Length: 100
Image (cartoon, rainbow, N blue to C red; front, side, top):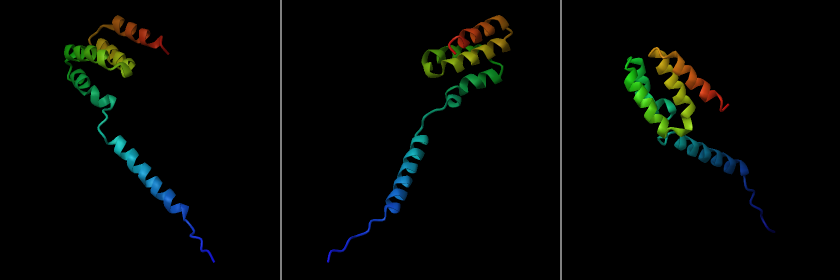
């Protein structure tokens, strides 16, 4: 008489879930910088009222941060508003909103 070994698939499913959870946790903790971390220098300069440093930082980030260019343009518009340049800030926001 042949004995069949019953395989419990719940154990395999649970271990697979734990493995996927660990991989996702590793991915999130692996050092990818968020937008807030990448623009920390810009925002610190803006809140310290060093608008010329913030503007130059935003201009340099616009060259390298192509994935978040719209957000950098909004930061540039905030810097322009803080410096009293209403017309240029409105033009930047209007140029950025055409792509939507």
